[in-house]
Picture 1 (tube, rainbow, N blue to C red):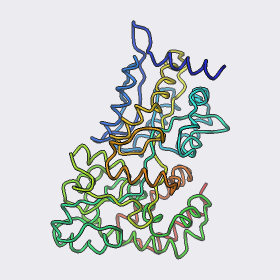
Picture 2: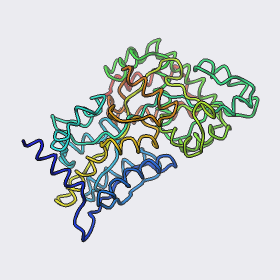
Picture 3: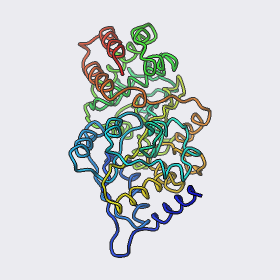
Picture 4: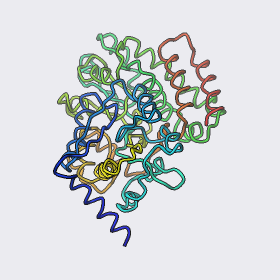
Length: 410
């Protein structure tokens, strides 16, 4: 009986607060590009339709810029009502410090474990058997986005895999195109390397390095091929003089660049630009080599506020975020896959449908944020920033330093 009583309580909360005023919640996140803003507006719309007030706390510059601000506010006694982190261990210390709201009761009342798929998403929100966050999407890094215009201008066919892309690079350069668009944020270079690792070394080698922390594999032949491919790729992106990821995506959209290694959040930018998958651009999961979806993405945590009215609003927002209608509206605009498989995604474009098919087939891996600590991730980002920005560090030297990081990883 308790489960149904709790569910009824949350349902009542969604009807809104008193007619005198709507409870306000500040929600911090780093979704500021055109596609991201359109997606997060779906959360805000649903929350306000339920009778609450969404105070948008967008922080420009991506997660690397936003997370320290969010963490500083929470630990400094100025918490927001809800905040975005990636799936994984980024908020682990905040949870251990007792600063995050326990969502177990609402999760069990609504049966989150019955419909959130894969279960690793909810596992990433769980510490000592208690649930502290809401997974809202599945974002996979494993994509190469290709501009049809760029390849048409260069007089070569649109590639179907990484080897064909690399072979087409000289023709793109001869046509005045940048083969590979990439911004200068550290997470972009680190993410691109991770995609190359899964595509070229394979999932077993990736798991050995990122899950088992096997430094011998990180320093071995399989990863040597990855570093060689990355060294070639950094030549392709030499003249990609932009900072933000969405600026690099725009280079693909406008035909200035042939392609971009980027997560499926790039789809939101193509949609805002009015481009059609399969006509204006193509997408290659796993670089067309090893079709895998990594189950990264975003989750929302709710810092403790010691205010019963705001806590009720926090629980209502958590419930809304996983509801079928909001999951569809948000993910169609975000370009990500929903965290539940019981929703209607007939409106999905060709690229999103590819991702759904791979997910349904179970060809999935966890994201690095789910397997490596923020400290280890930071060390890898520093190394990759140096490696991708200058050919002064050889593939061999970079691999040696990478293996040393993995040997000490936690």
